Length: 450
Ligand SMILES: O=C(O)C1=C[C@@H](OP(=O)(O)O)[C@@H](O)[C@H](O)C1
Ligand SMILES: C=C(OP(=O)(O)O)C(=O)O
Image (cartoon, rainbow, N blue to C red; front, side, top):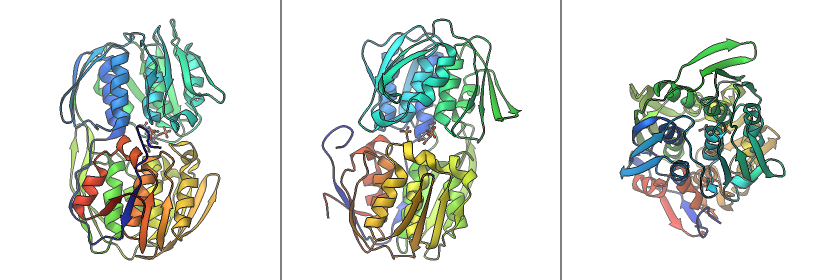
């Protein structure tokens, strides 16, 4: 089933060259944060380029439920009239975050130190994902959480009426956990310290500073420490959301594997905590260049140009790079199937707790398409078959996971026989224009199984 309706089976066929410009939507991580911090500021925040995917729309709806006025002004243009730090009202109904781990975890953090209660739920995928990683540190502030066994949704949080500041070392590399603790720290008196052993995406820190919060980054014995001073008055901002590197990954990868392709993907955010895939592809021998490098809204941005790369070779991806490309391993696994030799991906255990178990889903689908894949708890090896070498001819199951669906549809554009997914519906959570954008480049997609 798709997240919001009947399943939408879709098939991708071997396509002629992909050519043209692929203008992908706004960054999903930054879009969630712009709405949440806008809701916590005093006054009106203006956002342009907001991703209007279902995950972000669910966060917009949640911010309204907590009392912020969120208005859709024009495509991509939104305003948020914030209620101030500590100003959240108690929602009258259950907060449904749909398919979005980022949405539910960041919103839990944002409400955790206000004297309100809220009950959270989500779709069948989100209800399987662990929330204890967020509610454990929130308990240190005084927040109480009551969920299903194993810390699963639906879950009710009772915000701490008298929150205390916290020092917390994040035990897993997770920007969502880091961000939830920082957002909770906003309404605690004194300094909240969040320490991460491995640097993860830093959009929350950057945006908190932009909204006028006082925070500094220090080296602690355990790693990178973010020290946030609580109870600031956040100043509303004008935010231009850069285009999403995690969405850009799909037209880029498709161009690399489809014969004679040449695709320009303009205006992509290349924050170093997000750009690991592009470094990896270049190490594999991809013809991928950065043009017109610049800075926009405090984030590095460039136009990406990707051309068919028949001589890519498998590599060992450095495990320390994983946080900067964590959502890109599914599409990397597809590119690896069209490179020669093995591509080794280690340190990727977090993939098992995403919208689906992404190691299992990719291994199963690629094997069904004729590739040899080895996997372990936190690693995967894809044995590449070279350009045009993947047999294809399979129906793959995305398990309510947008990135798995898009990855197999890209594989089908270069495989010998068509590749289908049993439900492309979840693609709307992060990249609602995927089908039209790829079709305009020359991708051959049909609704339905092959
Ligand atoms: O903070 C964020 O916006 C995100 C963090 C990552 O999740 P984890 O924090 O679980 O690693 C990533 O997979 C997700 O797509 C977005
Ligand atoms: C993991 C992802 O999102 P989330 O955790 O927000 O559901 C993703 O978009 O790949």
